Length: 178
Image (cartoon, rainbow, N blue to C red; front, side, top):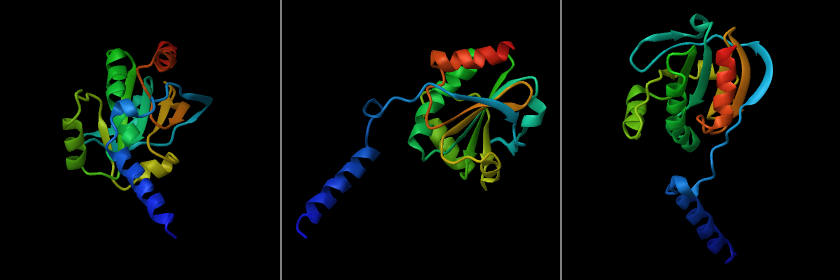
């Protein structure tokens, strides 16, 4: 019985330290997307934080990176700056990033983005009731899909990514040039 108290204290200390861990203390983000046989992407039509409607069907002819995320998710928070760098890398080319926030309101998202060192220029879409998340069969956050110019999912990833890593840049670049 007396062994439980020290064990409980140790577990609580470990949990609390995770909340205060610095980015340098966390494992690196992954840098690969899992390629898959092309399959039609589900519909995705949502409004962004400014009220503008975005429809994946109208983006045929462009490669689209769709990232399902939330502000409370540590890897989601960490990957946002690299997603912006990837977006900027392909600026002016047929490439679009859509960040789909799941279940949060505009104020929460704007509070988070205002704390970033990077200004995000890609649209942040609102999936307040998680309908898109269910349609896309997202099992965990963050989850990313890469959609080709024909509107087919060709790659995906579950978990945080370093989107401006050379491997991901090459994957996106190859699709953009096709």
